[in-house]
Length: 256
Image (cartoon, rainbow, N blue to C red; front, side):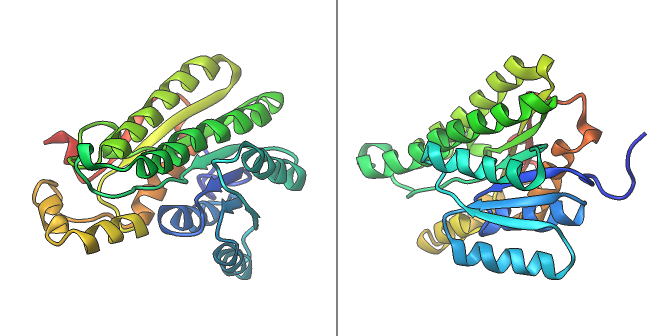
């Protein structure tokens, strides 16, 4: 029933925020699972290096500069995939930002604006472009990167928590709206994962990592590849009857 040569063999998948962390890990995992990957991010030099790494291994990879907060950029990234491959089968909407850990009443407007613009408007821009490209070819699969912060509260991170709850809302709304038109929409909700955002939080907040590990049943931080593997399954045909779900990839954090 299922292809055994790779979860994503033959699929064209767009990855936003692909220049580092979970996005870069997803590029490597998805390519190894057989996908032609289109990598989108703002940092073009990093994208070029990652494309070279993948193509040197014989994988199909290309890149497009993209700031997801700009609707034209999101549309251009999707158009790049369609122009190069004729269609878009999947998308991993991973681009996001974390901001500062600051009490809500002390949070600056600029921090709120940056987080909501990237994590919410950016997703909105991508979903519109991706779904619009998938409908004419019979559908596809989309995975949005939320967070455990989209399921539970995280102290001193109110705008981030609000933005990731919005990701969950968009996921469920889009899944419901497009299920009968062949588009599945799911989300992953990572817990503590080794990324630039997490490393920055840990560096600026001594003791934070130990505190998070103490309340995580597995007692550790995830590797980015562990989140990417979950996203790969949700993008694959092996999750064909799964839509509108938010999959925690968190070492049991939200199950305490």
